[in-house]
Image (cartoon, rainbow, N blue to C red):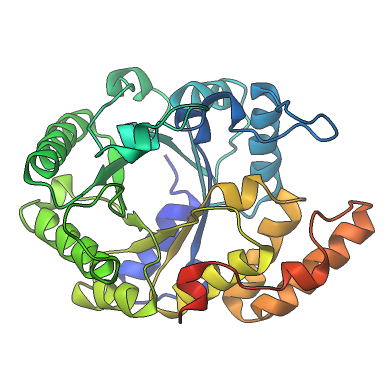
Length: 326
């Protein structure tokens, strides 16, 4: 099989040939494994109603067709559909979420994310092997011995199974969702040490292709990147925020050493998903500042006849607490 764009980019990064054009962009459309029916987002003009699974799949097809994505992350059921109908093409790498720990169980009316994360896997790796060779595995450390031990034991079982099947993985490490005796200012260091400690005992055949973690500030990100040049670090998007939040997070992450962005709600909740993603390479290359990218985005919305949810002035605001604190 010919190397896909993600593989070529990772090869350049590993060889020390990185340029901003090697930064990998992923659309994280695996929200159905967390939010269920509401994952595709609200149905325009119909308060209280949500778009369908078919709409969600069409969003994925459109992003792939536009050509700016390197990775499409989705659920196994949707990945199977897109593979069967030939929507993925030859360049985009399909990845499916391999586990759904309880801290992402975000059903309406539920409260699972307030309890310490427990390991769980819906996906059967043998069932996805025929159409997918890359999966996401997520862990959450809470500074609770019993829960954290169960998390790393489950990760070990997964690694061995995936390696035996020839399935690659990338590792998502969430910030603690119900931390025990851990101050907010300690989270970045705690997560960095947890990652390094966990991977220290993992040999090359079972190591993750790259990491996915929350942006805990430029200093914390740079610390992890500089500690091990063999690790490719990616950032997750978190909440939707403003468009400025999206482009600021992208630019600051790249500046501090991240080489992958995996944005879910920041893309899915945009007034124009395609226009938003199309501007990301320009921000990464420095052709546009984050603020200028917001202005270009609003100009594109106007050209398309799309009424923006926020005014330009409001959309230029940085609202993410981690970003505003820097």
